[in-house]
Length: 75
Length: 75
DNA sequence: ATGTGACTTGTAGTCCGTA
DNA sequence: ATACGGACTACAAGTCACA
Image 1 (cartoon, each protein chain N blue to C red):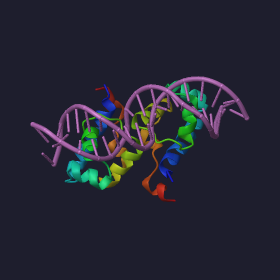
Image 2: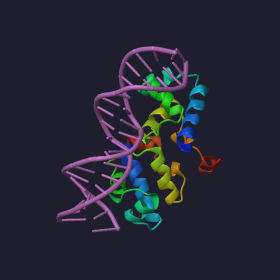
Image 3: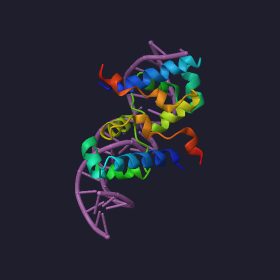
Image 4: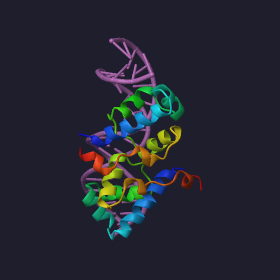
């Protein structure tokens, strides 16, 4: 269950590493708690659109690139 | 403030009307309360990604089409 | 058909740790 | 540098009544 949160988390993690940032860096730069970033990437929480935008801004990408395709959710 | 929630709400409303649905219809089809749909469209709440997907599914569109461009948030 | 107030409940999100 | 947990607090989620 919660394929969606997991898929979003994976994408954020992938993009974060591509930017050469640690969870700590992302947390600091996006003004959120480090432990929460971990939870997001592990797909343990279902983030709000506002957080999605803050993360996308720090990772210098479009918010939509962090969202999985609908088809990806039925694997 | 909260340009983001308002922008998302406007897009959802626009798309809902394009589908010829009432707030009631959207609420029923997406399994949420009618009054809550109204609040979303008025930008009073900051929805989660999961809600975004449920709404996009009912409105037969990609979730990303309901998200505003970053540039749109600084008007 | 929609807006809004006054709620309650669930979970998003924080802050403290341990390993 | 990350995973994971407990114990919080803030706010999203959901309901109902009435304009």
